[in-house]
Amino acid sequence: MAILNREKLLTREKLEVTKVDLGKGEFVYVRQMTGRERDTFEQSIISFDKAGEVERNTEDFRAKLAVCTVCDANGDLLLKPEDVAVLSQSMSAARLEKIVEIAQKINKISAEDKEELTKNLKGGRAASSTSDSVKN
Image (tube, rainbow, N blue to C red; front, side):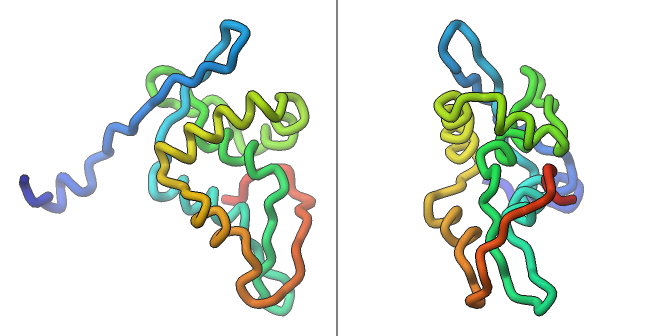
């Protein structure tokens, strides 16, 4: 076991890519997120109202996670943040859930993580987003 130096820590890591069978003879690849991508995804679920109170926004949760993880065989993302609403409305919940299950597994997003991300931390009201994209 070796300790990593600065150079090794800053070298882009090869991210895990997993094939997901969607049925009907079709599949996609899903990959791990980088730290920045995970932060962006989490920020898309949490927002703050004008008073600074935390609000939860689980609208299109599955599609947002798919957009951040669906890739080609090389790990290059296929979807863009502006694809969230269309993906959410065009793909069946069952197929989208297959993607989400694998994305959560390989990105270590547990049920507790999801709850922590979406719970109302300061007693503010639940929010509904008017945005169709993952926040940057």
